[in-house]
Length: 406
Image (cartoon, rainbow, N blue to C red; front, side, top):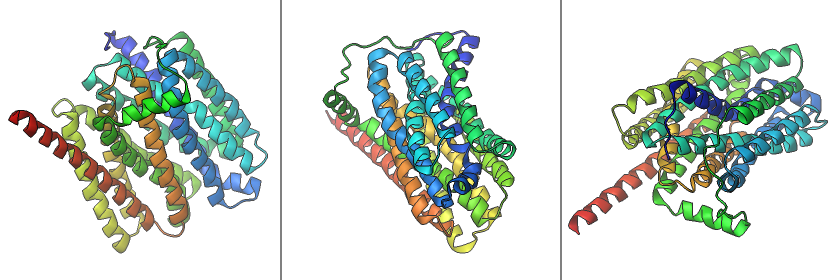
């Protein structure tokens, strides 16, 4: 149920939630400039270091499925605190890793801890705000989260240059401890524990299946999945594109990666303005169309002009549209649920990361000599999103026709 807040308390809650949700991009982007250092320290190819990113994404996808029922059963705060403790411990383990396999495993468990914040933040927004406010608040969270990819690679590059890649994980551990203090003493509990929520695996699976059977959830969660595929295929391929293919330095990579992330922020903030005049669904349809047109242009780029000053603005525009799409399809997918908001939030996040993981694996296999395969992945993802939304509109129209006849 939506609650009333003073402006200052609302802003503080949104800031805390935005910082929680930013743990993900910070954990991904801050050590990207150090891929070469990690490869050198462990004596492996830089492509193999990419497996630390893949294991992190898989951990997020699986972890969210566990946090959903836990947050419905025990409330939001207790599982969130437990997750951040796990994140802190495994961040330190990453810093002390003595070979690549240990780092890959530690990153997986680090993701299991960190994704608690991703699940909790969306569920708490759904608990505390009304439908249209949910998209507005999520856009604000996107603004806060969007700052992370701008700051993280640059800060990571400076830290790695001054110390080493291990220092990144020390900083992330300290960041997690600060979040623990804020959650413990500032963030209110937004949902009463629901003792009827079962933690038996069969019951959990049954509940997730029941959520997936909701057509509105399924369509918009899948749409969000393809949107995340666009975002994470770009993130996982960015070091190759800008450092290996276009020959930028690590410092230049930090600035370019960060400036592209500005597109994500601008999209999320323009979305807030658009919501004052248009519905969630109208904006979602328009964004799907725009992404399809843009990525079709990306196919043309792959044949004509694979140059930095062509690819760079193309990716900026893609992220701009993702900034529109992500909060809106998230809000649309969560709208049908109240009591199951925690599980629904977990499932929508897990689907997004699962799609993102598959996209990053494709990128690791295909984007090794040329940028073109990334453009094909972006085009396919955008087209699938458009198909899903058009399918929803068609079913909705058919239902209205049948209702009017009755």
